[in-house]
Image (cartoon, rainbow, N blue to C red; front, side, top):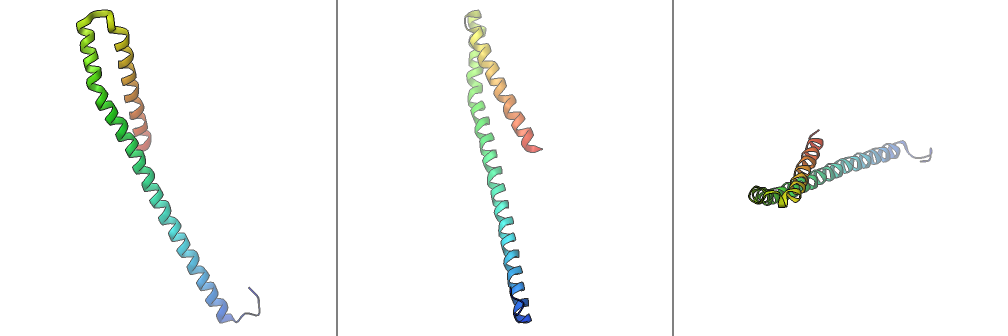
Length: 102
């Protein structure tokens, strides 16, 4: 701004600029809130999908355990691997949920 500007015009210009800055800050804050909400919703969606996959896998694992009980040692190693994979998936989801709650 030049120093030869009318003081009233300077005050008006300052007020207008300050108003525009406040509006931009408010818009940025609102945008950040929206982005945060979207990120939290996306995270929840990922966790829900992972839990749903485990729920679907659980009966299959139970069936394999029943087959193991009925068949003896023939399927033992594969059933152990399946059970270990299921347990690992459960632990991973628990750790993600606990980290997200912090």
